[in-house]
Length: 130
Image (cartoon, rainbow, N blue to C red; front, side):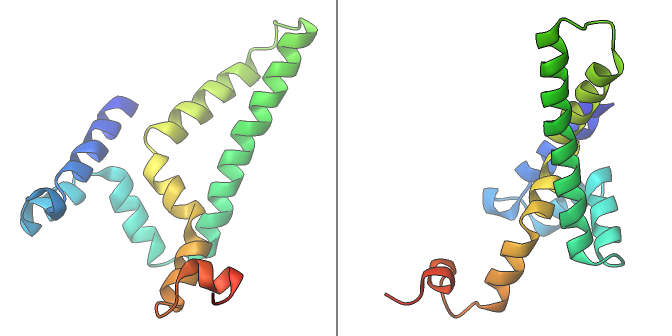
């Protein structure tokens, strides 16, 4: 299932108007992507910073579980399988079906900053002019 969703997401990215496809083709592929539809519908209802927090939590769970599994293997405890299964599920879902969504969610603060200050560069906002 993850592979099919991932293939549809790649096809959605490949049918961009940048690569010569028409807007109708791009829209058709966008509405065949389950993750895009969920993201499109939920961002119109839920505040954007909620998705940033969700993205940070997903990545934090994956990193914390990676650290925990590493500690378990280092101490020789191999009979606990739930952390390994959780790690497999979180990492495989984050890098396949949720990859573009999580990247977009993690860039929410930066995107809002850039869009609100469109007349100045992003580096100018942080470092000042010059």
